[in-house]
Image (cartoon, rainbow, N blue to C red; front, top):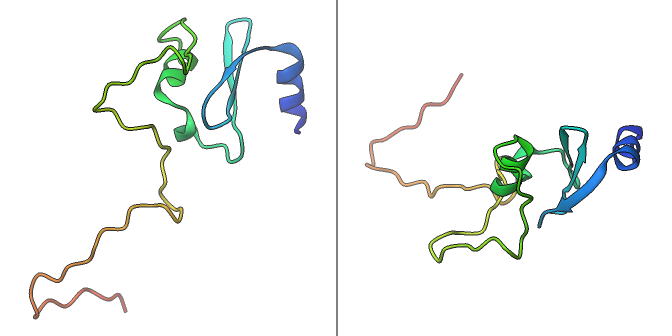
Length: 102
């Protein structure tokens, strides 16, 4: 645990966590997130993002938030990971030659 995380845990009030394991704290009027693992802002779910940026004062609660049947579960940005989207490469015509830098 870093010294920064130590001070946040000692002098801030714990308010909750999300499904990714990130922990959320409040100190005076400052709202703080301690990321689990890699510090990647896209790992913050939308409801917690709203709380962090003072768009709402209501704490997100995983049990109380209802999803519509058309909503998919939130996933962070997967760019640069093994799970990143890779489109299927289709060649439009047989005379197509991709550009190759020299």
